[in-house]
Amino acid sequence: MTVIKDSTCTFCGCVCDDIDVTVENNRIVEAKRACVLGKAWFLNHHADDRASCLIEGSPAPVEEGVERAARILTEARYPIVYGLSDTTSEAQRVAVGIADWIGGIVDTTTSVCHGPSGMAFQGVGEVTCSLGEIANRGDLIIFWGGNPAESHPRHFTKYSLMPKGLFVPNGRKDRTAVGIDVRNTKTAKAMDLFFQIKPRRDFEALWTLRALAKGLTLDAAQVKEDTGIELSRWEDLMKRMKAARFGVILFGMGLTMTRGKHLNSEALLSLARDMNAFTRFVVKPMRGHGNVTGADNVVSWTTGYPFGVNLTRGYPRFNPGEYTTADTLARGEADAALIIASDPMANFSQAARERLQSIPYIALDPKDTPTTRAATVTFTTATYGINVAGTVYRMDDVPIYLRPAFPSSHPSDFDVLSAISRRVQELAH
Ligand code: SF4
Image (cartoon, rainbow, N blue to C red; front, side, top):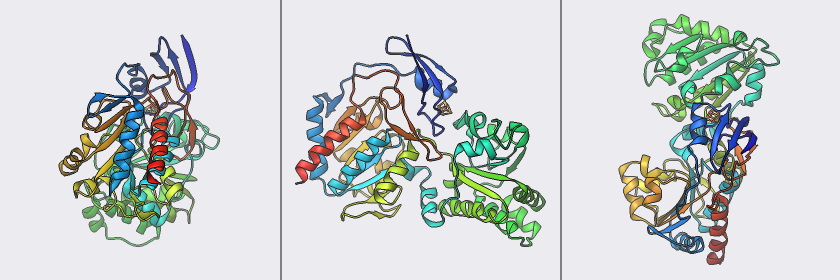
């Protein structure tokens, strides 16, 4: 029996790095301090005897898979590299390099979750901070369009509501928690104030707050009609926001994936910026997958843009909607794909799925999924965090190094992608 102290859970964007993992016979039998989702992530993982490589469904040596993959990618005219949110940043970096060598597109699952926020960051920037600052300073915490009580179960206790911090010594008692959402969720029940706004009216609610921050006079009936909430309640919230010493807005896909999309994100980021005329205020998206923040970081520091980057002309171009994977597939443009640690066959539109099924593509994933089952070349890879070391970025852009529990018989994403990259470079010359 071995105990790995301070192991890291990569199931959600909290990336908790304080989990004590007990391993017996290559199986995790205990994950101390993990939440219910984290426990399932660790305890359901076990060694398997699947082949590490399949070519058209038949087992093959990994080297043969690498050769076939490199040929598919170099012979394509409009290849795409997609996924990347559930692997190490070391592997993400190699994948971006492959997209560059083959003159293709690199896109991540951000394009189907916080893509609108990625666009808004490019436009108005982000007043940001670490989760440690929130734990130590945050005295007014606003959750907008998310349900962390169920999606990120340790967020409240570790970072945002309960911790006793340097400037909030009484923990929860020193904080005011505010929920703004169209649904009355489990998160709403944990709040001091809850604003159940009209569906698809986030933009109007945000601009109501922006107007109040500037001291403008608003028509009470119009505000109620637009947002579903009385003007007096918005005024009370703005008073609290101005009086806070360290205000925080944490937002989820309820804001970014509703009517308004990137304009909602822009309004929210602008509101946080406006509030800094009165007090310190920050804003952060609640990110889902374990290393989706790493994907944004790596693609940004290699190409200058966070996702949906076209490298076909030898320099990066960013145009969500044109270069994002769901669109290049649905329009029938992509003619080969490298899919890493994601499952577009399970969640893309029918047109996109049909196109993916009709072109040669390579899939890397520790799990057996609809995407790996339909791939021309499938690599079963080792699981990051459990079998593989490397770096992941927490949702606040803080990089954390992984401590794996036990080795796997499968290669890592990094190993497979590095081999494909080497072969692609030989073929491209
Ligand atoms: S909150 Fe997220 S990272 Fe932390 S233990 Fe739970 S699932 Fe894992």
